[in-house]
Image (cartoon, rainbow, N blue to C red; front, side):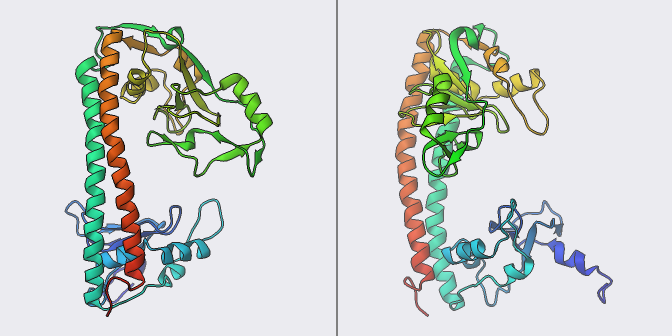
Length: 344
């Protein structure tokens, strides 16, 4: 106990508004300011977080937050984190993170420039999110709530599409070859190959005899983070595992309409209906094939598809702009921390 009767361990784990939290186990290095405690004077943090209290006479808070994202700190974390399934960084190592400390005035100048650049990035992301919400609103306006609206005929998905899944085997991974896309590689409406495993040409050919992916198909995770269906819009050179594959061969159904149906709360309704909750959610191939699909008139589906394509065209422009803004931001960060923007 301290002289005031407080537990030292409690003091170490107590955070207040203005403190910085630093992840030390798992997604190490992620940091953020405590901005709101819902009216409480303090909160207690778990063991996977570290608290950074700031001496404002020496350090500008925003400068420090940006510095913790710099290449210097990223490289330090890679070098000093434990090489285990769940990376960890000791409190001692966190305390030793190198920090370049120009004068407080220079720190504030740097953070002002970076905050402005970050503001532009945040605005662009908000515009993209607004277009995403617009598409969902248009879907509901044109087709109604897919759970409650009984206007349209409903048919099992297996009757109007060809529904398959990826390989059930576990092919041997190789250093170079063809990507094997699993649920973890489908993120934010895109196929992310940054952390993909590769298989041999022989395994690629054998898997594709059963589940070849073509342009226009929908693929969707079946295990874990279910949903997030994507329409394959480029000639694929990958095979799939633990991923549903929906191929279109019936004029009654348009892939863009089905994609947004599966992206709505209708999929949660199907999961709950089939009691597929639990620690790790999953949808079986039978569940997907038997899923009852509302079938609005084809011309209405086509009209919705044209609207989506126009919105996606605008999103594409915004995404390109966002990439440029992020590139400029990273360049500013490097220049700022090398002392190329402001000098003491």
